[in-house]
Amino acid sequence: MRNFILLIVIFLATQWLLKKLRRANARAQADARGPGGASARTRHGAGANANAAPSAPPQLADPLVRCAQCGVHMPSSDAIVAAGQRFCCADHARRYAAHPTGRDAR
Ligand SMILES: [Zn+2]
Image 1 (cartoon, rainbow, N blue to C red):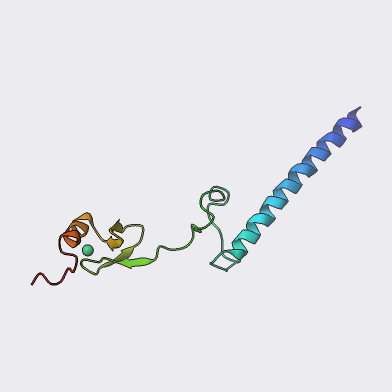
Image 2 (image 1 turned 45 degrees about the vertical axis):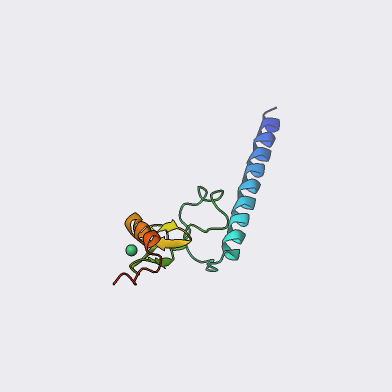
């Protein structure tokens, strides 16, 4: 009887290991296929990001965008998007809406 229980435990352990291996393989392949391309890169936040956003890899740095009003550059996550343009602050978005060409005020 003890052998039987041991067999079940071993069986469950193998199933669990296989599942873990398969998941690790799938993740490695997804990393290799990603736009970054560097498969040797260390991935941080493993597991938590797996179902976040497959189209936007989290380790990709924010691209810099230009404020349509003053021309200052900032990460796209900090930018305020209004009327298809990006701005460094809400004030510039409002100013741009008032004077869409921006620099003809003078
Ligand atoms: Zn600005």
